[in-house]
Length: 394
Image (cartoon, rainbow, N blue to C red):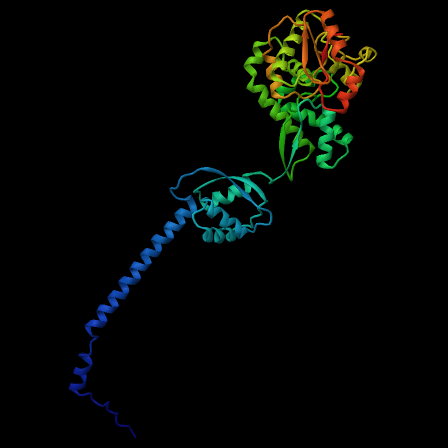
């Protein structure tokens, strides 16, 4: 039996009209457009802000770029490093730099000093932290007095680095170490390295001064600092050295004698003139300093027997300047060597009590002053105190 089709109820025309006429109010349309505009503006601002941060992070911006040295204390964390770089004006934002550092490999920063540039981008700042380490923090200073010889310097460095003096001296005479120094300072060290008669290749070439040490310094690095500073002094007076008829090795040799013979600028230049006068007349310098060095001792009173030692360093027995320096001269003595006071003096002697230096033209006059101002008793008093030893001429 066929089912009769079920008719859908017909909607009234009035109902259809109501459906077709339902529209959102105008206020809702305006609000929707406003929200859309706000979202668009926020999006654009976010893009601009993001682009600005990206630009500043990548380049550091347009700020002044200056070279600065920053010190990173021991135990500083990566986060603290970022804050430090921000405070120093190296990066534009510390928080963002911290986030940047987290995106790459961990940054292992050593404590110490870094040479960096202000107003740089994050990548460059990180690169400088890796590559621009300029030295550990200063931990100590070591002072080398003028007129100290290699053995004396070895004693000072041994105390500083808590080593045996013999081991320090061995390091200073190590052939490989000396070759490395010669390669780095060829103009300075060539003459002494080629001289087979010198006792110590670095004698006279270790500039006496106060040096700042760091945790990474050792005997070799400290010795190199001294050699480097002597090279600076050599270059400073290079024109004057070329004008003389002596090599820098010979200038250092003469300066090392002047350093030990005189304490005032006036006497240094006068004694320099005396030595040149004797050299020009092919007379032995006859400095007690040379006898002591030859005998490997320090004595204020030199005997006739002392002067008989067979050594190229004994300038009582040999004319000229000998193999090389007897100690490390200071800059004032080098200047005096290059600027002698002209005179006719051939002899000088120092009062062992007062340190005052007396000059003579003749041997007889000189010997009278020796008898007056130098005696074995005076020498013992001088050795127990701080008076100078000084004489030239028998």
